Image (tube, rainbow over all chains, first blue to last red):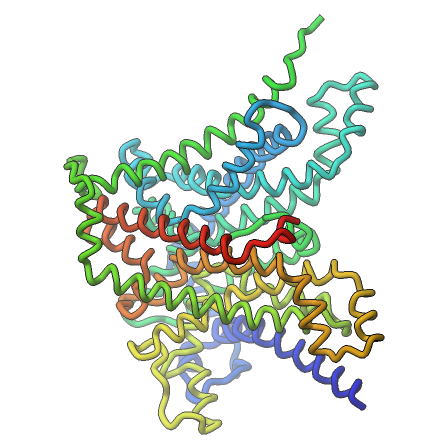
Length: 275
Length: 294
């Protein structure tokens, strides 16, 4: 009897946990599908009485949403490419080559975790202004990449470490150069780590607010979080529209997440973290 | 025959791009922020004037600084504490065997994976005092007599803490779950055979095993909550009202980008960093044990 009560409690608690995470997002979906009149109905309805895609159509046609979306894709994509290329090279070096100061470099990387974004954002803004990089996607990609690099290095280092050096040595014996050994042996084996790292990098760039807010001034260069906040800052908030925008920003982030979910937890313990 | 570069040279060459990026875009800016904090400098115009420790002296006598420091401590303390307690409870539940466990574990991570702007707009809508569903439910259950103005001055800090806990607790859950899965089952079984109660097993078997990961999680979460910018900013200031939740990062941002006092803003950021360093050192002194080294 006590066992049964315990099982019932576990199921109820698990359902409760799932509900608190998902219901707010379902509410966003529900609101985004409501016509304006129903959005402001009291009492609120959970299932839209007359579901419509009107909010999404208005979002795409009446606002610069698609421009923001494209900017976000470009910036997050380039950030992943740059971070992964530089990070994989660096992490490989940290695990496979012996050189003076190697451990110091690894520790230095860890120290950069300590710096708050605001401490970096203020000087970066002034420096970017001085170099006329303000209001360019280049500035954003560079800022995100360097912000992601410390954890990318740390995470990839852990994955590269777990690959036996003997495999590479065997390739050398067979006459393959270091480059070929890395491309055909190390990278495929480290794939889960590469994927997990890309996801962390992508989500950070996709979700970030503060760098775009500070470095980007013109509307046509803004990324999604800042663009949507501006929609939201209007005098009378058009909630249906805002919720539709919320849905469209969330879907890529969650789709990415679901696709690699099992790699993600693997990376968790090794230091792949964000704020 | 092609000459091979020695390993050490190759190693340095391969790490070089990463070092250049980190140095020029993290270390140099941080150093520049420290340098900047000794100047009176406008955020836009190039003119700058050396003031030595002038900015720091001004901060010491600045009531707004002390106020934002206090608000930051309240926010970081309350939200980290709640994340820890709720995260531990949730992790223990999700560690049990039940059908659909994998799916629920993934769902529970959602709030942590969505962009902050989405978490903020969703909760501003749920907590809306006129059309929000939270007040509607509270009224219908007769828990309150009139709608609670969650985003009003009286409840702004509380609602901000609640939203932050919702958003960031999954981090604690996953970190603890990862560790729980590696605890040998025999430990719990042995205690059970010896007749230990569920509470005693948790207290004397599970909790000691979680010590090291809790140490790290508390450290990271409190640093990140103390320096949190976007959630706090978007919850209040970014939407036009936020004095009640003006924490230290927000205050530094406002000095720099609203009042254009880049030197003063940089000094605030530096002070925040020094306080974090000091707190981290004390934390290590107090709680770091030999067994944490693993």
